[in-house]
Length: 107
Length: 236
Image (cartoon, rainbow over all chains, first blue to last red; front, side, top):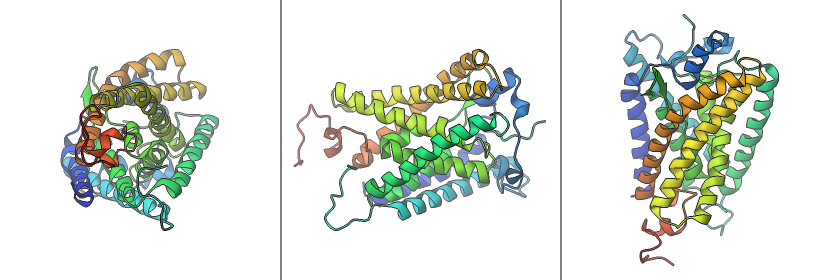
């Protein structure tokens, strides 16, 4: 499979999962949250100020009434945002080919 | 009602300042080393892969699957990232995912960010890097053996992360180790099975489509995707 096609397909799958499947993911408490409930330290958790202004706090897209739609939109935006950030970071950091460096597996 | 997101990484308030800072130092050191490694090892072909993998792990971390006892779990992704990109670039990938989650999604604390990167990224990625390489040394270079190792390591990485979380909570005087460790390991033994299934499926798919993108795979499996025991055609 062509590299470009493979990468585009993978991003499409990720965006699809985050946008269309995550709204139907289990809403049960996850591992740590469950243990925190049982052992009664869950209420020590808090959001710091900067997080209260987080644009997508709680994986809910702002100003969207429908909970599933809000989650799906947050997943859509988040996945593309993480992709852009990861790609951008990698692009800035990448190894500059100095001419004849081998392009195979990492040394 | 407590104002907490549905998917819960360690929030602020669970860890003492000292523990959070110590974890922060470890996480920053590992991610910084990942940045250095990127400079020497990240070739052009893997540049987009890093972004794609971060996006995939972010997306799958939203997919909580139900497990026994009214609990859910989701992929952590450290083993997946380590197998595809190597352990140090994996630290970088998980760092990107967890920073975005903490700041944009309020998922996981800001002072606890280092601990979350350490527990869900660094420890698992380094463990995976070490054990997959060790497995390649002692086991036959076949697809089945490789995927088997990946599965076992995925499970172990989740358990190590859960244990580390318990130790950090105990060191912070939040909850006694004797109380949280069995509970954390019990829940994450199940979550780890999900991690193993998803990781093996994902690695297996990449191995079928683009085996050259699997950094930690034995070389015999990258040439044609065929096990080493079969004749390998078209290789140098």
